[in-house]
Image (cartoon, rainbow, N blue to C red):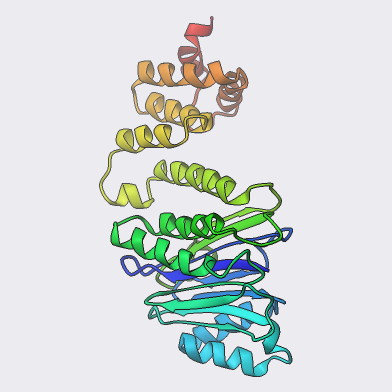
Length: 301
């Protein structure tokens, strides 16, 4: 009783699943993906084992269509199941059982599949496909395309029972020795009256935090720390932890005046950031000494 999109980004090769349902905590159930392997969404009268087994088949080199066929053939009640699969080459496949509750159906397109069941109307999943393809043509980032697909389904009525939870997961294009390092995004709204806008808010916050990562995409693209921080502040103006750590970064690199100005912004939002600074100084952590902390807090004296 859910709608979802499963996709592989043609630019980066990354895999993504985004989903919404009137179901408590859809994130641990529907989306399954692994870096360098592919992705699966299992839903309707959900057979959760389709997720890990599907990934195992993809890991063995099976195509998306082969995985769907194998999972459907192995199930005792395929007529009530729905799933979408994307393999490492971007080949998509899907299944909607004949007894899935309407409105139910799916569309398989180049590099992605959309599917839904127990929806308000049968225009939901076609609208998802259009939104994703239009965003791709416009050059929008992968995560933005996934979010727009969810928002398109909502505009068409979404889950007929209403809204409750949503999730988005993104995995890297290549295998990682430590599999968890290949998980680039895993964000979930477990119970909320309007989970898709809330998911967008949390995704925006996550992307803002990623900008501060010196190993992140923006840094690897050559963007300066100052430029990345300015964009992060624009994206998430209430993320004062970013402000605090930018103050530390500036001060420990020698620009104490700039660090003091940033710290003042954080402390104005919550005086406990000053206490946090003192705790760092007491522990001699992150390059913060008692002397440096005193300099940064001079305006409060």
